[in-house]
Every structure is written in C-alpha cells, then in structure tokens.
Image (cartoon, rainbow, N blue to C red; front, side, top):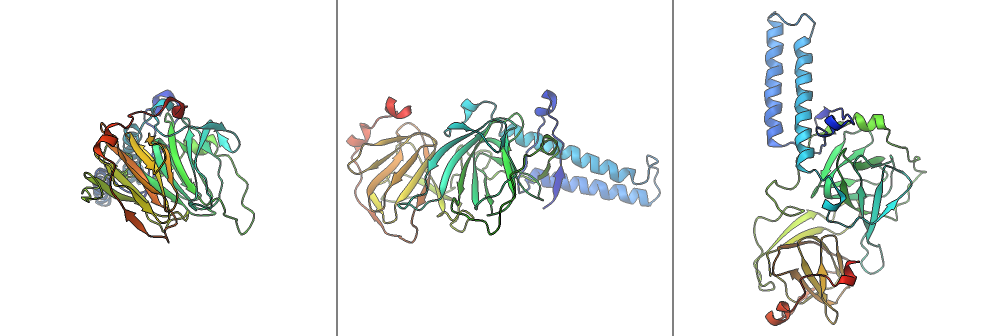
Length: 371
C-alpha cells in the first residue's frame, strides 16, 4: 500500500483542510498519481539530459515530492469535508454516557448488545468521540469497527492511519496495538463488535496516550469510501432487489462483513426496505438480531407489542420465536440483520399481518420508549 504523509495543524484555518484516510484508492486519486508519476519521470529525464534546474541537486525530485504531498492534502481535505459532522446532534446512533480512563478528550459509550448465552453474539457498543478525541494506544480481543457517523481515524502500530467514515468497516486483529478516535473538527461515531473473552498469551503492553505531536503529524493510507457517493443509506444498498412471496414488495439484501472475521461474529447482512415493505411471520432456529440504521421501521415478536425502530435501535428475536419486521409506510427503512447461532440454520415462513393491522401501526415510538 502506498503511503502519504500529511501534517494536520490544529488551527482554525487548517482544521478546514484536515485530512482523513483509508485503505483503498479512488479513481481520481489514481489519475492524480499517474499524472504525478509522469511528471516526476519527465523531470528525471530533463535532469539527466542536463536541462537547467533550480541549482540544487535533485531539486526537481524534491519539487515533485512536495507537489505530491500537496495533492495528498487536497485529497484528504475533500475526504474529511464530504463526511464531516460538526455537531453531536447530527449523529443518529445512541451517544450514551461519557467515559473516563484511557482517552484524550471526551468519549461516550452506549452499550448495544451484551454477549450472552442466548445469542452468543460478541459484545457490541457504540462509541462516540468529540472532535480530536481519541483512545490511547492499546490492545484487546479481535474487534470490528463500523463507522456510524462523522469521520474518524484508526491506526495499528507501525502502519499508516486509516480513515473511517459512515458505512466503512475495519477489522482489528486480536492483540494488535492500535488507537482510534475522531478527526479534527469532526464528531465521530463508531459501533465496535469485539471478543470480550480474549486473554493475551502474555501481559499486554500498558495503554499509552497518543501525544498531540503524533496526532498532528499522521501518515495516512489511501482511502476509498466503502459506500458510493450517491448511496443514501448507512451501508451500500444492493443493486438488485430481492423478489420473494415472503415479502410484500422489493427488499435489497447485501453483505457488510462475512462470518470469517476477527471478532468471531456471524456474518452481518444489510436489508433495505422500500416504504411500506414488510416480510411475513417467520422463525429462525438460531435467533436473530436486528440493528436499525436508516428510516423508521417495525419489529414484532408474536404475542408482544410492535417495536418502532429508529437508527441505533436493537431488536432481539430469541431462537425459534415467530416474528416479522419491515419498514413504515412513509420512509425507506434499513437494518443490519444477524442470524445468531449460525450452526442452527432452520428458517420457517408463515403468513403476513393484514393490511388493516399494518395501517393501524404507530409511526412514532411511545413517549416513554424515547426516554
């Protein structure tokens, strides 16, 4: 992976040009890189031919490197501006309570899914950082980081920083020393799914603060968003609709991450419902967890009240229980779907709620459920 270096100056003027990065290369970056490489090659030929230069040996090469760094700065500025979230209120996932300890700046934690003996899904929290806030260098069990809002950074020791924006997914292997946090001038929200039972073979290194000097002089990996620019949902919507008689309309199903992941989680799937689309009553032998990401939707377990789901809400359906889920009449709705206990694959479908029942569903949560 080609590396780029960017100095982030923590001043009002430079914050608007702050940088972020990731793990892939955009087409525009590729074109810029090709142009820069060609320019450097031409400069090299001219110098070899004895063409007059600035008088310093290798001056053209230094100029080309400076131009490349300038280009990286422009690219990074665009990346951070496109994902920028300047206030906490713009974030859609739960903020939770401020936590203390191994953090620089304010960090907030909202527990989402507890690891238990029913679903056997890894511990899952949503962590929010104020602009510039970050964790210390630390290590733990394998962890999946999922961007849920704003722009953040993730860095493994000895490697360049990766950018995380909404919809981006990064895996942190067990025992790897790393830090993560928000970009300057940017709130950042991330869902973390991690192996809470991990025990290191030897004593883990002490958590150490990411100094201001480190944070202000970061080296970035190339970045390509994992969600297309014209995609209106948190994660990438599938191109083709699923047409099934177990749904009353089209739904779009894609994959976020497979089951072969560092946290030991089952695969995470992404389902987008058009307005008014729901599925039939059904059961999962191993149970199911839903995490709402966009719009307003519904989930109901047989014999229980309907849950109205907003982004960040979690719905749990125990193994073998009959349930249905889908979108409200007025908005598109999307959720992450996890089939828990994946070794239990049984799935059974039944009929669907009536149009009259659907028409009587609430469009908002009860007031007590919003508190």
